[in-house]
Image (cartoon, rainbow, N blue to C red):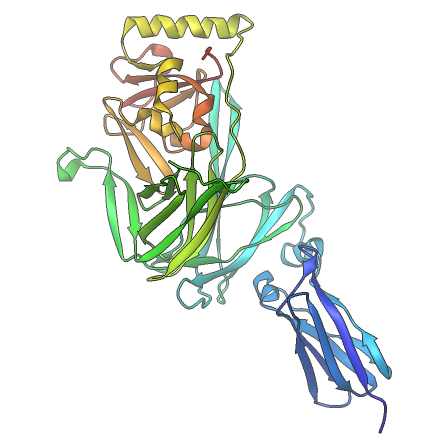
Length: 443
């Protein structure tokens, strides 16, 4: 009997530098149809025994390779008698990017790739994926928040790849497939790197229309957004890095209008949620907002552990230097004494203990805050107002993005005007204008 060979090795995920469990390693002898295989364990290790020495075609398979949209060719190895070691690895990010994004050169750009899948059975579905982000453009007498949006269609197998995305920037990603859709989640692509993320979609069980002016006649009501509902549930605990529960944290799922406040135990529970990939957003006083992407399933409970580990640096008294800021303070006080609008001074803001910027407007007469696709939209007299930040006019979408623009601890004063009563320098929407001052006035 000829000596037999034992082959061992490790499969490494080159994208993360970690072992890859669950990979199926296969070895086939050139002169025979017999196939030998083994599956890697939690350490990425495998072992195949009983092989005869000779020439083999070897390779491995893993679901991650499918999501990356690549096929690895087998390679030839010559095995002698005794123990042999053969290691494998997922190709590096530059190699994969070169394969799926020909011509990509910039080291500062990245790629998002994955599958659109059904939330219930994980089957891949043909559909589309949209990624959007915001860039601040300064010029023309103001700041414009420019919306950048990239929609792509999947292939027939539901696979997608979006090349040339800005790296280390918060991107908003969502997916649709026929009448099914996901929520909107935040993703961040590493510089010159690759982010693998499947998006799960579902049909909504019910929906609720949100209108700008709830008191107007039905024929004149303007729909602001549509909230999705379902039968999925999520529960969990909000705590600090030291394990201390966080009380009074606001937990919500954007696009549903559903939220909850944590008690002293830090525990939360939300039901009536749509299935699929969704965002659980947690906000608490003293911490930066945290958003966690979760894959929810209909009629099942998903548990979540939320860590708040990024404290917000509260602003001390602002020392004002230079004529520009001093003149802003004097102008603010002059408008406040004139009484044409509604004002929040630093003292007023401090008393409100706002968790998000839109919380500052919750009890202001004539102002309405309504849930939107991602976050909250502020309305003045039934429609989105023009937003000014430190005297600079922002883009048209700013009324829906206030919670993304700043943290409440950064806001030092607010002015709200209707169209009829606003100063000429804050012209804009026929409904009115909101002027936000951040770090310009002493607290």
